[in-house]
Image (cartoon, rainbow, N blue to C red; front, side, top):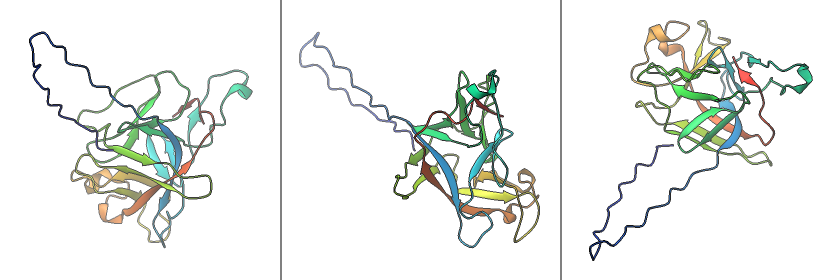
Length: 209
C-alpha cells in the first residue's frame, strides 16, 4: 500500500491562544495470510510462496527454527504466513522483534534475519498492500508499488520452459538485471499475481531462517 502522506493544512486560530486540536491517526489492524502464485499455464500457477534463506521461493520448502524444548511447544513451522498493514509487511512468527519483509534495491523480495533489524540501504519497506481472502474460497491480493516496481516475478533456478524449480521471487524493478536472477537471464522470469489465502490461526513459526 502506498503509505498515505497526508498534508494537513492548519487553520490559524481566530484568536491568540486558541489551541489547535491534534488529528487522530487511524492504524490498520494487520491481516495474516498465505500467498499463492497465479500465472495460468505455467509451472508456478497455484503454487505457494515460501520463506527460505531470507528470500522467497516457489517450489522450495519453508525453512524455520524453534529453540523451545520440548519441541511440542513449537508452532508447526511448515507454513509461510505473512502479516501486512499500514503499508508494511512481515512474517507472522513468534521471535522477539519479528522479521520484516522488504524489497532490496535489485528487486529481491526479502526478510530480515531473526534478532537483526538490518535492511540493506536503498531497500523499500513500505508500499505493500494486502487484501484478505474469505473462508468461502475467494482469494485476496498482495501487491508492492515501490521502487518503480511493476509486479512480482518468479525467476527460475535453471533455464527450462517446463520446470525451473525452485523459482525465486523478485519485484520487477528498473534496477533488476541478468546478474541478479538465478538463471543469469531476466527474460527467463515469469510475471505472476500474488493471491492471498486467509489465515486465522496462531503464528505459524517461531522464526523463519
